[in-house]
Image (cartoon, rainbow, N blue to C red):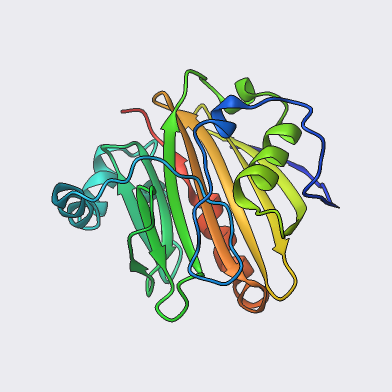
Length: 234
């Protein structure tokens, strides 16, 4: 595994658009979180069919089998951290860890999502959109890609976005980039990790989020989730 870290720190929702990113501007639109302060979340076609829920139940029960079938690509090939469970989607080509006491829930236009039992905003979500790119570096410079992701997709006009850190890693021939950022409005603030990857003709994005008070306590736990995200060939 190769990893590198680039520290970035700035606050802006008015950063000039140096690079036009149609895969973000056209395919991603905002949706509202159940709070008074809204965040922009990636949107797409909603899938709410019964078969989707049946498949989710199956996915949650096949972790051990998947570890045997996909030893080189699944998070299950690694030693599972204490108090975490593995989510592996062999049909859509990705996997990650989530805290054992979290519960699955539906989040608009996302393929999978888990939340804290007591705080819905404290959660992890994964979605993907089609792309003709083969690698995240084909999207452009990581600085611009991450800036657009944070300021155009995840933040709303009334929020100040601060990018705290950006890390890149390479595992199993796949490249990943994780950004830590904070969104602050007049009366509310949240912090997040977002991890991006490209595989199978899909642009995958994982977002892990918590409000400021919980972030201070659970940041390290949430970093485990962000770092565990993997994509696999399907």
